[in-house]
Length: 254
Ligand code: NAD
Image (tube, rainbow, N blue to C red; front, side, top):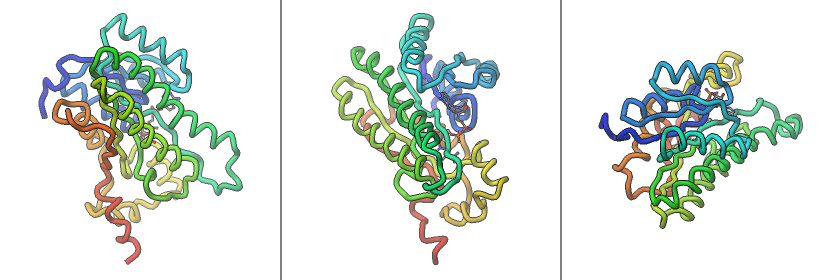
């Protein structure tokens, strides 16, 4: 780990007040990035920023105008945003398709796909003319395997594919766009699902070759790698960070 990897450059992390985003903000701050945490939930964003020596702002990533204004404000006060982690996301309520209200489907797509798109475009339109920048979107292993999450999983498949499309758009301008796909990470939404009996931690760990869940900092480490100069020739990929879960589907069958 290079402590000066970020060289004081600005990295904006959406959904940075909790879970994977918070851990990623911590890893990036440790590696010398100047981190800005943007989250709809302002109080924990500010608390996290104080702990990490970062900046915080209240932002709903589904609001295009607010997102553009946030980028303008950060760039005017601090300088160019050189990295974006488009991580804000929601899980859907567990319900079969016939019983999930359409508004819930729309809400998941609005945050996980449309919100990530808005953040990526706000970043890319500023990075491309400058000829440099890095973007990482948070996908999920459910982007490539079915799950009883018929709104969430397609939203993640779409956001991973979107990252590859944007990589193709902006590659000639020196902007790299990649996805990470976390496996099962015990952040507040997964912990709540486990407490309500909707997910069985024994099955989740049995299905992973490493026999465990993933730590949020392990996602942060992958994001930091993709944003670093070590990944200078990497764009348009989807990096699973899943304790091997995608490779281990048969472990719960045989
Ligand atoms: P989390 O709930 O702990 O964190 C999500 C953060 O996003 C919260 O701070 C929340 O306030 C913020 N957020 C939600 N809607 C927002 C909006 N409209 N605008 C701005 N911020 C908003 O959840 P997490 O598990 O850390 O999830 C982070 C990302 O990782 C999500 O995209 C999620 O889908 C993805 N993911 C998580 C897991 C897992 O096992 N935990 C697995 C795969 C993918």
